[in-house]
Length: 539
Image 1 (cartoon, helix red, strand yellow):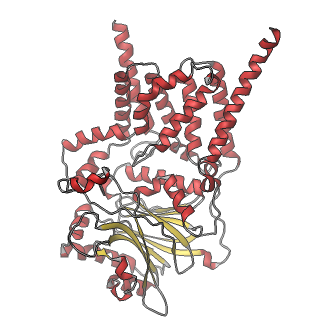
Image 2 (image 1 turned 30 degrees about the horizontal axis):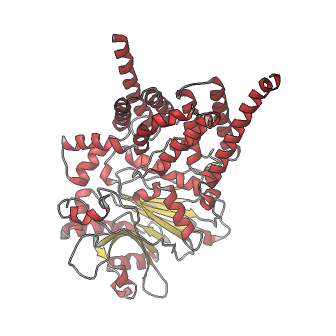
Image 3 (image 1 turned 45 degrees about the horizontal axis):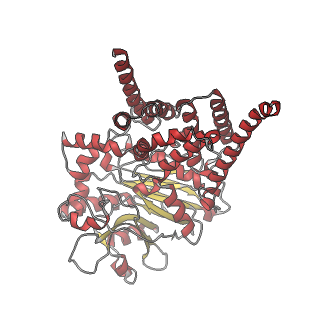
């Protein structure tokens, strides 16, 4: 009895350790990372859940795995809860532990279907391709289950950049699939050496293929019009100052606007484009009114743009309603472009309204019940969801799209955005405010995950943040100079942009991956057929 008790408890320890190893595959501010650590962690976790039949024990393993990842990788959640929701210790810690349950929603679903997946290995019709089939199901669960801060098993392969040749062809999904396939052959009984050899050989060949043709950075500009001088204004506005300025406190508004003005008009360079981060401007604008009334552009913007003869791209709030009867979904989290001109006054150009809102921060995830619950839950914002994909163009004829905060982490969203606008943009500007996470690993993780959009679509990303880390991400994973975390600084860079064509992943999405999967299944069946053929001939 005691031996069985010890064995079960060791399994629980390994699930917790598996979660820690999973987190170790992503940037952590106080220790190095290792890109294979998540695969080892998931191997520990799968070995535990696939040998158990009890859903209660499986759920315990899932809970420990999630808590392990939370302990090392998501320890910043309680700080965010305190800053965002004004919930103090120890309740923020308790809620943080509770939120750890939704870090891996796909694994939560896996708990309930794991016994069904095990049965696939015993069905004669699927037995030959059971492992790639189950790996496909788990991979689709990972990629299709909604998640605000998705951390896929694929993402740590980003440390191999620029050696990610297959990313623009398949996206992240193939990296997850190859990992899950290998893990399942090691953990899902019955374990056969033949299946391990097949999946391990395929995994090694997969890694080799990624090294054949490394991702490249931008090519040299054809002419001077292919260069854009940009100023990224990282004003580092703290949360208290930010909130009081948005509430209309005169001193706070003055301090915020003075900081942005002084930094934007610093005469060190004459930029073509000045960029402010997400919700930088504390006063609400009204784009529908600005469209026909350029005289109503705030004087601050006019002064900055005329002084620098530069375009201005800012994060702010766009008012949607014509009356003041309700504050529920009355505003958009928005990005505005104002264009300068040598011959005339600055003009308002276009606006983008954030489409993917942050649950429990910018809205509630309860659909039609949000308006009713909003009467009682008043310590969060209730933004209106955007619906239009906006293509912007600077005075230097560079085309770009914008994403706000965690939108950049959603590959299907960015793919849809790129395929919806009328022309191929030269780059993406991602406006972000990571001040809610403090000096923690989150800004490093956010930056790390954002890089995958550059790999998948071969497109540069200008990442403008309030508190850091700001930089330009290039398609090969390299970066420009970075701003420091929690610092007040201008990042003045000359950015080269080139015309680009859509990648295979942008054009066809998951279709190439499914073709690849069918080929894997056909090859696996062929190997099994060839193995059985001699015995059939003897009979």
